[in-house]
Length: 99
Image 1 (cartoon, rainbow, N blue to C red):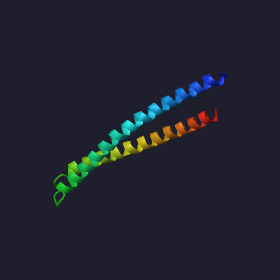
Image 2: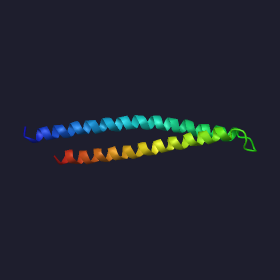
Image 3: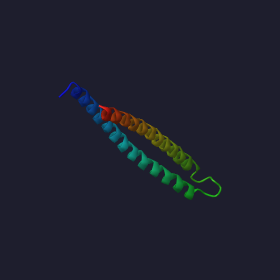
Image 4: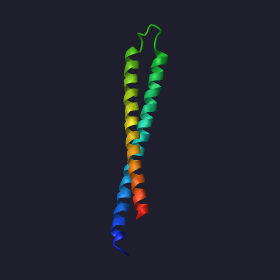
């Protein structure tokens, strides 16, 4: 083996860490997606149960919409993090292929 072997080994160790982080983020994304779906259903339930004059369930609807927006933001943040880590993985794979 040449001196490149330790460098390749380090690249593969780094790759394993990146894949582990992507796996963690995928798990979080699944959880966030489930929370988002639940919040969406809660908004729909509140809208369905709202009285015509708007007095019934107005507070519940406002709370549900707030939770929905929070969940939507969490999904967006996780999507951005996943995209970043996938880009890192692509870059590293290119480096490994060039070695």
